[in-house]
Length: 140
Image 1 (spheres, rainbow, N blue to C red):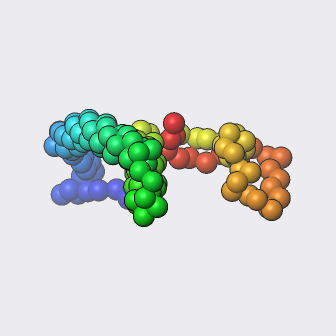
Image 2: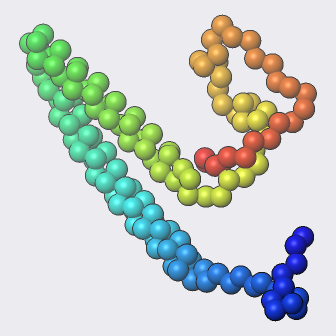
């Protein structure tokens, strides 16, 4: 540690940093994120409602027509509607990603909770005897 002298006498250096502006900025970002999450939720709900209308009318059309060309087009519309619903659910699951504080998570518990059968088809998985922890966003 080095000493500071001023005119031959020991001196101290004090650094003071005003964090009021930083705190105001953090609060503004938090409030903006809350507003965006609300807007995302409302928009997601409205899109799901519109997709349900499209799917409903497509099902009615599918049941009332016998034209193979029209049935093929209706099947494509229904498939696209299901894909949109999956995308909407995906956005819901990851809406709050990064909003919380990271926490320590057990890798063994994470792997045991997820269904790895589809992901690891033909692959052998063995977990370590030691408990490995990772620090990550706790996606619920």
